[in-house]
Length: 288
Image 1 (spheres, rainbow, N blue to C red):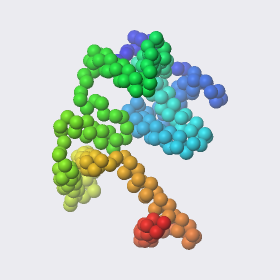
Image 2 (image 1 turned 90 degrees about the vertical axis):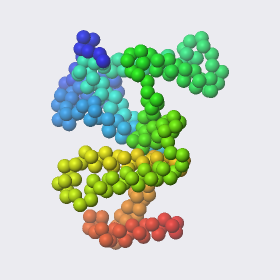
Image 3 (image 1 turned 180 degrees about the horizontal axis):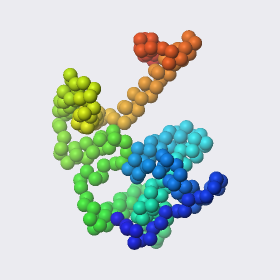
Image 4 (image 1 turned 60 degrees about the horizontal axis):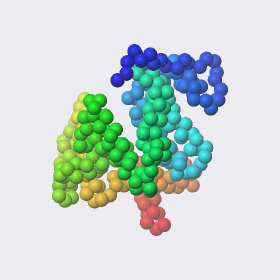
């Protein structure tokens, strides 16, 4: 970790009301101002921003799929905001700034493309991929030399919790840490659900809140075990969950449409009426 001896200083906050100039330095100064004068921005930390960075990456993916230029520009900007926000806070800590991040990226791109920037010639895409993997392996060795030991499950891909869960299980399976068939995965799922139920059965809301940390762990165990079942079925847990999300949104949209046709809003309805419309939505799916 770098220290303040590197003389890293955060950008100076912009004064007055800024204009949208399209310049990176102006954006950094704007972010510095927000860290001074915005109550929400002031209270954030690098750790508190993690969920927002993940969310923005997903929203960018949706925007690209929509192929709407305004949406794409907006979401790219939101992703850039996360980079600028993190850099501002690390600069405030005297560790590194945006210039260091850009330099590190430039060095990586140059290092990983010797076939572009050096005399090295690679014939096709496969050769590029193989050379890329070799360079990444060299980078891993350099990382180990910095005191970052390499562990077998460190290759787990970054992504949502479901994606990471499925990938870490896949990596462990390659090392022989797995059930032979799906039966063991189902038994584990049932075991974890039983343990979660035990944490909740005959407990008051006060008792549940007092034990919420343990309950969270048990719930996580259930989710992890269910992902294992998905993997054993050669299904993608993330895709399966997204299918369910889209289905839920579609059915709830049907409820809203039917209520609107009757001159009502969701807020004017009750669970009995909405549940009946939910069943109607399911019948509508089967008939369409």
